[in-house]
Amino acid sequence: MPQNGGGKGWKTDPDTGEKVMPDSWKKYLDWLLSEVREPSTSKAWAVENGFNDRTVRRWKADPRFIREWDRRAAELNVHPERTQSVVDALHAAAVQGDVKAASLYLQYIEKFTPKRRLVVDDDRQVTGLSDAELHAELESLMKGLDV
Image 1 (cartoon, one colour):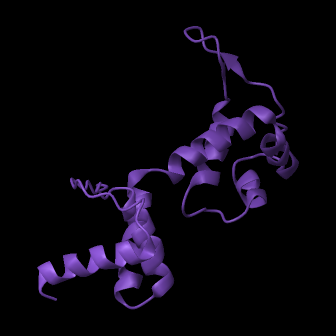
Image 2 (cartoon, one colour):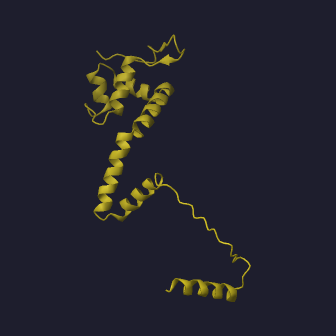
Image 3 (spheres, rainbow, N blue to C red):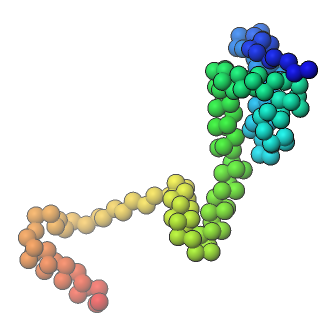
């Protein structure tokens, strides 16, 4: 017979003083965060685990459950293995000619590319030159390059 899980069962951790989620809630949260959900619906999960489907809907609406769900989902979504698999997929698509994937991949790797700083060690100042003077200066520099 399905049971009403309600909000009962929360315990206080003696070490931290924080409330600890009941095991049944943890089990449901684990199912929600799993990549492959078996059974495929919350209602089916509730029936399979002996709960009323309204019970799991109440769990999902409980602020304590929501906070833990958000925390664990964020932790899961930024896991290096997940991130790397997305980056690998972007790279593969970019290599195949997907311009959008290439753009996103390059934006991602830009964070890891060392920045270069150009330092010009030159005594010549061009900020006060007129257009004609700047043109003459550039021509003299170009002649020195034999271009």
